[in-house]
Image 1 (cartoon, one colour):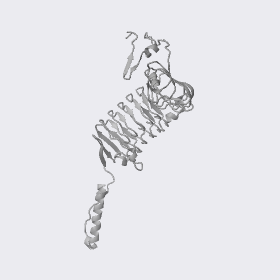
Image 2 (cartoon, rainbow, N blue to C red):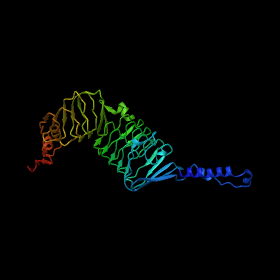
Image 3 (cartoon, helix red, strand yellow):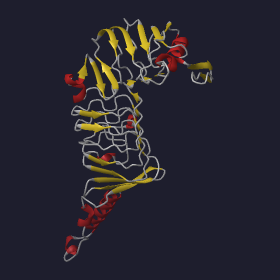
Image 4 (cartoon, helix red, strand yellow):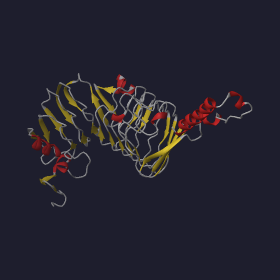
Length: 364
């Protein structure tokens, strides 16, 4: 804007001189050189702040954005976006930007930071980043992504619509992947999720090539690693989840109207929100892990079978569900001198903030 104003001012001066002086007065007159005012590129054309201790600089000779400093990046509100121009201060370069480099010391990638930066194909994320924000790379042109082993959370729609991505490996540091985080990544054929992930949001990987490939589904259920991601709405009857599965994703069986019962093995440690919501024919869920974390509203008004004193028992009690206790089989599969069922069941709650554990070896 300052360059434009300068151009206008000089031109006005020239016009005024032409208007008030006779033409023969300009013979031999040397006019000012205006060529420098019309430079279309600069080595570092724009810069600013993007966090309390963060700065950004865009180099339009290399089409590179560099973010430097320490701490969190600002979050940007996509609701104020006009005509699809990204809300971050470098948004005007969303078509031309090809590379983004986030320097070590930055701890988060803010919400909508690279929203619709369709020209962006490559980004460097340092090991200092722990959080990738809401819609951070929404509809970006990324062709690859290296998520460092420092990130713990990938927020909702973080990579939504990144059609150029073909593979993603979630590092062991990540514990949660929120709703629709990679939804719409139509080119995504390879997905790796470690056991460290304990929460997977609804539709986290929907409408990806991996999701649409029927070879990746087993008996109408999509597993990725040791996580149950989704079930076909047409699935029916009695469902037994594979042993070894660690988590059941948010909304995994949502609207599976023909499912009548579900057995969840001991290996499952987390059942996410609405996992079995709106399953109108479902009458019974058996939860074999007495310490399984069950999110609020994960299970509807059904009979829950589990161990007395277990989290399933607590869930049934707090949600008004009928509860049926599992009878102990007294089988010692790991040869530790304790029956599997009893060893698991001898613990529970005895107050709002109290728990109890009985050690069968010491009778304490």
